[in-house]
Length: 254
Image 1 (cartoon, helix red, strand yellow):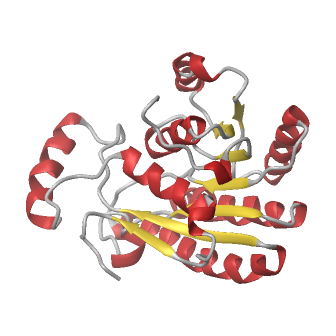
Image 2 (cartoon, one colour; image 1 turned 45 degrees about the vertical axis):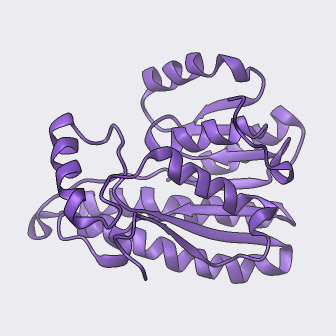
């Protein structure tokens, strides 16, 4: 932690990070805390994981708030903002729409319930969280987490790919809508990232495949996505909005 170079423009500000207890979300939370940002992180179901992270973040007591909140529930979204504002008696400066779900399956077998689950979590949630942000604030930054699957398509999870492609369109729309209020909106599109979503067998297979499929020859790390998010939230990116930043080792250039 002592080797972290602080970015002054984001210190002491308030961020909401959805899906912040695992994987990429957890890395984003830690990176922001290291930058002296106060972070409210949400999770939907896994109380044990949330408690484990709370114990892990003991060095940041008073700087974070863990909130059980469903991004698909509009009442939860409004309550989330109210809880954070009341807790720190300050407005929220940053929103990171990271919460998402992925399930692979045969396109011909995907049913309506599964489609709705993916779309509501991955698209409806960011849409209404961002809508509430624009209603409440006159300045700030939003970063949406997309995916390379939303850029090149995904035959193993076409509903997930559809939702992540839509996130890029939402980002561009929000950038136009937010510009008059000095709210910048960007997206980060990760490629293949090494997280606990994969089993050890899957990771081993991916690592071998990455040597051929990814120009840099390896899987990405959650911390590399987190650094990109911090950059887009900071004044280091003050003239960037509506952009989708690819963090994929050269797997896709578009």
